Length: 380
Image (cartoon, rainbow, N blue to C red; front, side, top):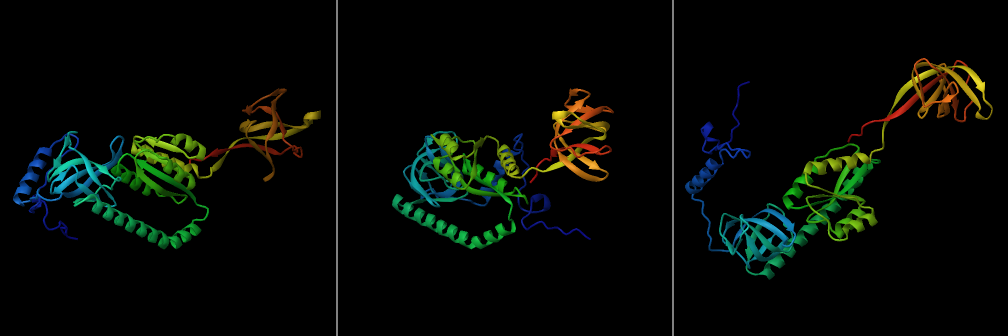
């Protein structure tokens, strides 16, 4: 079959297109200078311009709840000039710009187009990728933010109602399936989204994973109460706990674990899911012996004088007695003896005496089997 090119219109220059290709390395830094130079050339050729003399707008690059500063958002101004004191609207959050901090950590009074800047003074932590815009006044920003929040709340309620029947059917189909509920907290909105996405990719036919709450900033009393109500665990990334949270968590029986490496957090959640699974075992036969004689030792009861056939008999493990191919008893032994000495195990071709717990109906010629139950590794 002949090769058919699926390169879209406007392909790379290497294929005869008009899009510049710049190989770069984030490890060595190779090609970064060329990339920046080409971006500037393209911006000039395309005559990309922004008007700095109007109210600012742009995008949220990152956001977090920072101690001492409150909700913060790193913004990229794409139009206009953002100034300290501006009334700003970001989705369901609003505020009055209290401070602007540039990429060198310096406080500035205004940020023109193409400027990344950290903004403080917001009512909450917005989502990364959200649009922002400057409003005429803070009252207007508050009104629009409250409308957006109400719309999102109504959409969530409608979605929950629509999903109720599907959830009921799913639960009926997965009756007996274990579920782990999780509350996820992180230092920034970007890392929170990455963690939630990674957790949602965990697939299991045995254990379900439900993320019942997310947020940025330290673990709060509200998080603990939500986890207690939902019988959930709390996992955090690069955060701490508010005052009194640990004692409240102990009182409510809520587990809180914080991590500085995302994959360790993911592994912890997977392990918590596996801990919900009942243990599975496989039988491992340790050895056999044949009953050669029966001795009545007064208070101790009947002793089965036995000859080892193979393997090892271990006093603390489980035993079975077979008569021919039929199993006639299963349980523990009261004592295992080599001559007059009580021993923990018998190996090789030794002779031994076995006193079984609450069983004396064995006969000469019966076969004694020693086995143990070995726990299998759990998997999702």
